[in-house]
Image (cartoon, rainbow, N blue to C red):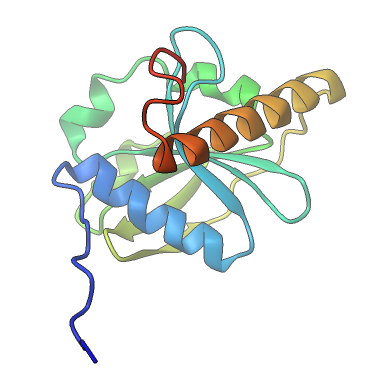
Length: 155
């Protein structure tokens, strides 16, 4: 019997490493996270997650001060979730982050919820659209993982 462990795939980019740890934490909380999701044209969130309660959380991963200061799109993400969080590593200067958002401290192996984000409930029509789009994106990615040629120009 072969006792070798499968090679662990750890992303090289710091933001992707944070997203991996965040996704692990969210799964542990019973969430269904999806990385690299486009809720609307011109927006791409690092992690969107459906909580067991049905809440939609967005987590924006920031690996350094420059990554945060050059990002001007994050406020557009607020219209697509019930709760908004920042994910940083333990060395990030958290005093830069705006008030009124959650905080998750992460690395490539896991994360810890440091500050819960306040709730701002989505309208029913927006929630239905986001949930539908999350489901479609996740389903297509799953098919693509076993059949990469299934839809080469979509999602």
